[in-house]
Length: 107
Image 1 (cartoon, rainbow, N blue to C red):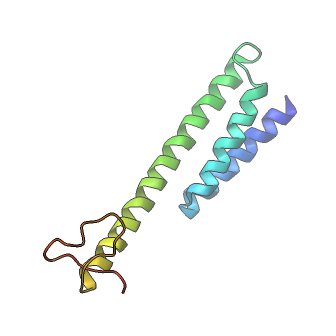
Image 2 (image 1 turned 180 degrees about the vertical axis):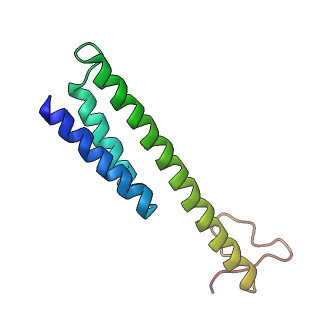
């Protein structure tokens, strides 16, 4: 059980770092640590510890989803700005470059 407690503490530290840094990678590491702890902290063996770890895992998953969504919105915003600022048709990457008003990111 000490190993599971250590994994939970590691998950807590990684989750806090992920929140402070705004990085999904740290939150993914926290999720992995919590899941590792749950291998020992089963519902049958230690129901209260299992419930607490499940709760922290759920919180880390929610934070990771928010972080990824924020990152995706930021990337989409950058891409949108690039398209608006660059004249010419879009590159042939599955987009319809023949549409009137299409713009190109590079030549």
